[in-house]
Figure 1 (cartoon, rainbow, N blue to C red):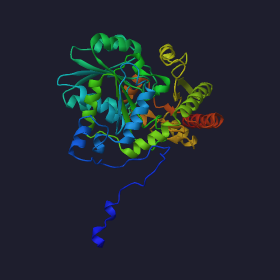
Figure 2: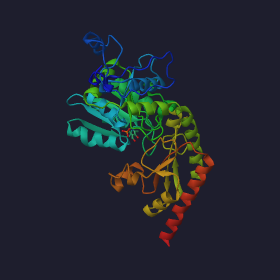
Figure 3: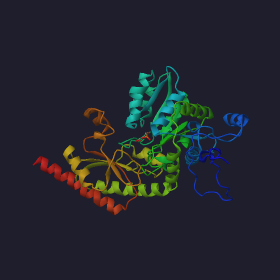
Figure 4: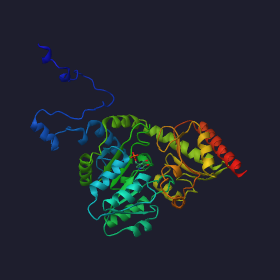
Length: 405
Ligand code: PLP
């Protein structure tokens, strides 16, 4: 055999094996080979299982989407399959790109994630789609914002960073009466605390980047649908607009998902304990944790979430920027990072990050002052956490006293 008759490039046959891997293998392949053109036809037409091109689907996305759909209740009557996307924003964008038609109007919560608010208030209007933003805990306000051409109602179950709670049951009734597509972002709550399909959602979206993946090392989204026609439209949009997820991110997220229940449980216990602790500290003006009696939507949260108030706590320091800086520096080991859902606790300052685009008055209208801090609570030892927060709040107070002096 001549050397040119042997090519390492062609040597792709996997070794035979009578055993199977315990862990889902990573499939980075961009393309999948078929036996012949008829076999490829069968895959494209859905008569045979398989993949053709990774933008159109790959095993790591299928396995992960299946798991999240199962967590969200797939298999129950009417709850269909989900699709992975490159990010949470890609999932939300896909919903609009797949379902809106010329002249359609959107009603959405006014306390959505910042980029989502930008999409609704700048990008979609640029393309001819108007959106009205309203308080999602107030069904009458949402109803008043509806127009004959309203097509989609989008809310987050628990909103960022004020942790206001949407009246999902009332909104689902309204959406049904008015023939709207009801889209619920379940990122903060996760299917462990709330299952939107059980309460009338047509579509559920997630930033899988957050607690579901849980380790701040992937950017991913998910969209699941009840109506097969929505699922088909979403699949076509995601593959055509290139909003698909990468195999490696899906693989990592599936690995993270295996410990999701444990992480959620521990983070939720810590969040409740931290909220109670912060409430007793001098220098803390108010604490927001959804199920508590002093939360503006406490009763709504207790009815919807049934004791699962998740891992997010917000609070207001009696501090200006100097006090906030002192707090952040003294918090030392707690990462100051504008994300959430990591296995470790992170703190963020909405006035200088997610809500920096708003005026001081605009932030004040949402209840976000300079001293407003959002905490994504992790799984650390709670005694360590409470000590760190006690020290950091005390540092903010010392800075405020120095300023006043
Ligand atoms: N939805 C919510 C509630 C979020 O908090 C975020 C991001 O923080 C997103 C959607 C967007 O997700 P991603 O950052 O994965 O695009």
